[in-house]
Image (cartoon, rainbow over all chains, first blue to last red; front, side):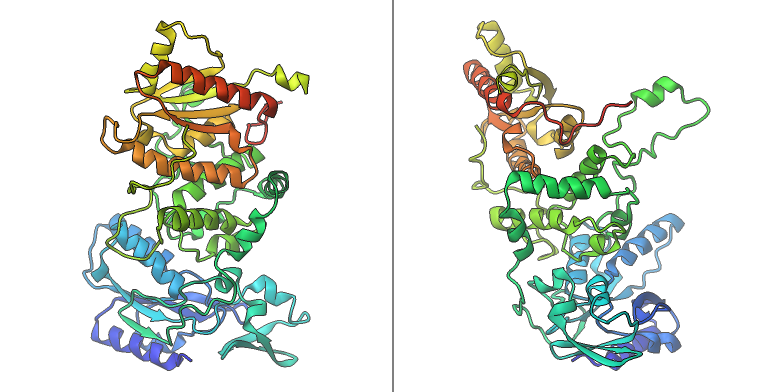
Length: 343
Length: 144
């Protein structure tokens, strides 16, 4: 069990001593039991920090935002930012470090282990509470305990846990400055890629009818892109912001611009967008599941990323977020990479 | 079925300028007969092909996409085709994963001296594509 007071004390200490300029963590949100991200600069606020099963956000996104902001204002404070990171979040940070997005000394990782459980899936939970809103959630061994108007409700974690947590291989932040909680690596409740394997057992036609349905529903709100710490490109292929439309832009100019992917939310464009995104995340996605959580129409985006992750792992022996110094997936190769498909 | 057998598939062929592109020229100057379904696009190296090119080709109506480059070890840029091998493996898996026929994508190694092989690759590809008929899964809908 993690004692939240330990995290608060660490945060308060470091802020008081000026060792970090901000602590990025979780606090109780204004919507029921759900935690929300918080950015603490005042040591007195350190007691706002919480750690409970609703801390599902991947906070490494805010390190990216911070980096972008500092670049924009052209300042380098030289003092690190502390961040509360779960296993998956820490892997995301490792990928960002691997890509030299920021320096290791700019980040102070307060690791938290997910221990016997993971984080909650809101959608799964809502069907379990008989319509009651929970006001609090807590870890207790292999269970989650929710406080509702009806009293306390204890649910086995695996029934309301996020899908990714069921299959999580490393629920422990290996890269950390300080870590709380036990390392329970290897406690998998389901085999890795179990959902993916079940899906792939279907035939081509079934797979297509499944995806066709989901690709049709995507509304191109780009929530998946906004919430993803790996989608940090200044310019996404979907937008053409380097070709601004001015009064001098002729119709011909506009017509002849390269548009890899149209912005309209039609099936063909949605496919191209989501597949391109999956390719760009191949070997980088650490399966934090934020894209799927943020999706307002429940497109199973994680499945695409999972597929790439498994190919990388099984065919190329590549594990995203495993080491800071390692090469990236598509910028490296091995002599014995699979090539049987090539005629 | 017979209608599908008569279907002439459109192939977008990304050919490396150092080998397959010259290989296709050799097939031409050697007067080797092969189907005219492939539209060649010369690229500096197969390693320069972004998986997005392939998605984009399907998006714009290609029935099949062929990527052809130098044999392993023969890359003009030393390692471009090794990198391509990885990327193409990934995109091929992804296309297959969402339920597009795997035969719509093909990759081959064709050197500048292999005109006959190039003709063979295109012939086989067209033969495999004909029974599949038009590709309308990733194709952009016609504007009304």
